[in-house]
Image (cartoon, rainbow, N blue to C red; front, side):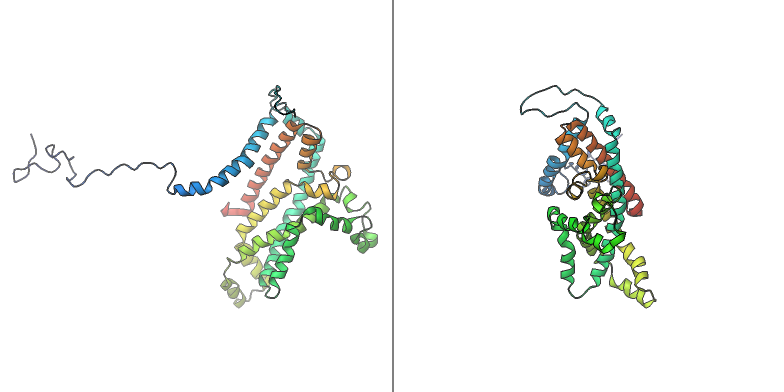
Length: 326
């Protein structure tokens, strides 16, 4: 039995019209949206392609190949010479972790980070806050702090060797309080001295990061705090520090990553590992074992362990320092 309207015609939604019940003739089904695998802005993929290629070629492929090497008995050969490189599992990692020199190098980096990271974060924030309030010679002071960062370490190391050698300026000022052996030849002071040098050298870069973050803090907050009787310290602790929280997380992470990859500074200042390996870093051991001793598989295993350790430390720092922003 067919449905009909009061005037005798077929009712809307009846089989005679071919339109489903509950839908009028002018209500057609919406066409299905096709999924665009390139996203909403395909042109953006084109613009980002060079960077993606760079990351794959310079970061992803070398890291993946290092992981492959670390699980095999790998050694250098002449070009186009094919040799068998058997899978050895975790043997290279066991060799690395049981090496006292490797253990000492990670302890050295721990000492370096404990000194370098807090000094870098604290000094760069304090100096950036001071420079942000300077009206005269602002450009001069900013450039002065940034010059050491862009200057090659080879050129700057000579100044520090002059300052901290046995008969250097620092010992002359300290007089009888000067350490013996001197700073860079003392097994207890070699790595702290390197940490001070790196802190001084990279300070300008982190000052610029904080200066950029300080521009986002409204001046009205400082004016309100001043009206309420807040002194400079209260304003700094309650307005500046929370206002640059994101920058502090970034500075902490960057200082940790650069510190964990320490190589040039101890190599130039202490001649490599320093007294009794006091300034040996994991990256220097990678160079020593992989290039000088011809054990790239062991060096690759050490590199993988270092990458994992840095990532774990970075995640922990981001949780602790970043808070809700993590």
